[in-house]
Image (cartoon, rainbow over all chains, first blue to last red; front, side, top):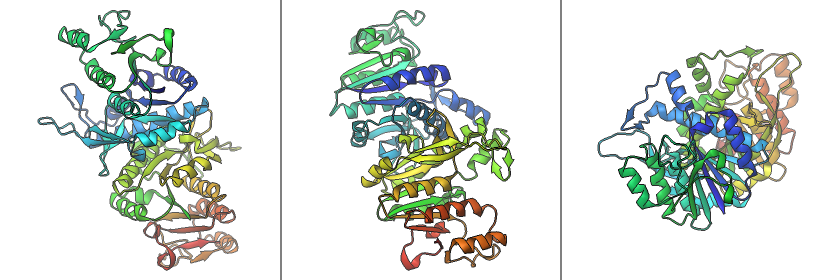
Length: 257
Length: 257
């Protein structure tokens, strides 16, 4: 079983939580891949540099200056900080962006009315190269920067990267894809931390969406999760980072079916 | 022959020069490794963020904030920009810092009187992993960020990294190491661009140093070059970036013997 685990900003922004997660991730047996987002560091750096962040319909526009910041923070500082920590925990990690070894090629988003700037939608994943790394006991740590094959970097959604990587590897592996965040799973009542669903199927998801019980920010994550669950990916789960590496009965989270 | 080429700030800071160099580098036949410095981007970013740069005896001190900047600029922006361009030129490049795959482990510099901060002196090179990459036609592009094996990043001199990588690979390969900069080679008269030496041996070097003909900034580069030339590295050269990929008679530069 290949473990594909995506961690988000809430862990990355907190050095103690990150270290705690990486201790557990380093000990997880078998082939594994970590995909990380960027956390608040990029937003803070943009603020310090007086680069205005434009948000359209809840989505950040990546202008040329913002792209540089994401490349610096995601592919540089965050990625290398994680890899250095994993190396110190006897995990032979390698930090990669989608650019490296052409792991993830994207196309610049072409939206009919909104110019999202340097944002990439994934086109292809180099599963062979990732496979050769994990077959050699190397642990890829992937930052959400991709490229268009024409020499341009593209800022890409980390949940989407996790989904595409899991799907590409599922052609020849059993894959367990986990999206980790700050809740115990998909909540039926956003006010109640204990209201997470053990399982969630598409019908129930549509109903929760119609009732506006699932918050807007969760929708892209869940769309990715259902896309993966409808593919050859063996198991797709949404969970708290504390349970990212738990197996069997000690696991808590929402399984997407 | 494995080509190990180091490029410096003057190329990285100039998008046209960089693109021109990468066009030629992409076409260079055979196994090759590119090592890059950081250019003025890191200094400029530090200035914008009001992070004071402390210089002691002509060497920059890497405090915790400066280390973050070097990781962002070198391992993030510069490294991924170069790799994306090489990928677009049909060169299967992979961007790596010394942290990734434990390629270069360093030790924090312990100076009797000066605290250089988070600066690393190279301890070991993972030649096997680099060999496996170049054997598979992959082109490593290495940024000068290393780690101490205890989870800390270290800012490391790019000339030293080029030297150590060349020396490690020379155990099982013929290696041509080239340090590229903005001059045609080692000049006997710093005022005369045409005064470059075709060859330079240790005796002549010591004499030029005594006469203070070789400038202070060139000394660490030349110390590295002589260290490599006294090892199993087949050929060590110092040249202008325009000649970085030239072979045989069309090559111009100083060979270190």
